[in-house]
Amino acid sequence: MSAHKSTDSASNPLVFSWRRFLLHTSILAIGLLLGWMTWYFSKPQSVRFHETKADEYLTVAVTPHIEIALDAGSSIAITDHQPMFMELFKGNVYFNIGRNAMEKIRIKAGEAFIDDVGTRFSIRMNKNGGGIVSVAEGQLKINVASGAYLISALEQADFNNIKISGHRLISEREVAPWTTDWNSDF
Image (cartoon, rainbow, N blue to C red):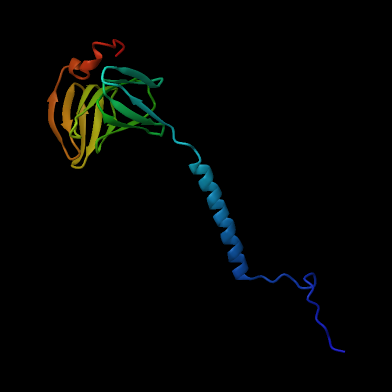
């Protein structure tokens, strides 16, 4: 009679294998990574789009401390990120930000980025892609290709994708002249 070896799994002890360990560890790591990515990216992005026709004006309370006023023929998109992100596509927008607003705002106008350091200002977009920023109170930081610039209260500046020009002093009524006729809240 020949000795017959049993191939029963219960009789064989579990043998450690680096290959098996790395395979199971990598499967576990990929599963954890996919689970984390699903949780992290599953938060839907909320975008609100506001647009006015040629003969209408619109005032929107973005948050309890931030109001915007759109001139006729204007459009803006607002994303609920932190910091809050807005993109001005065309027209004129006046921003009235309360003194105790905790939200930070970043605005894209053309290829320029404007960070709010102030409380009341307006942005006017030209058809050529440039714009004019006017500050009634506080300061704005404008980031263009040539650098970052601060515009203070009662100042106005022209901007395009590359530079700031025409930096000048203005009166408060020049900040958003379209709001004086139809809205006295600002």
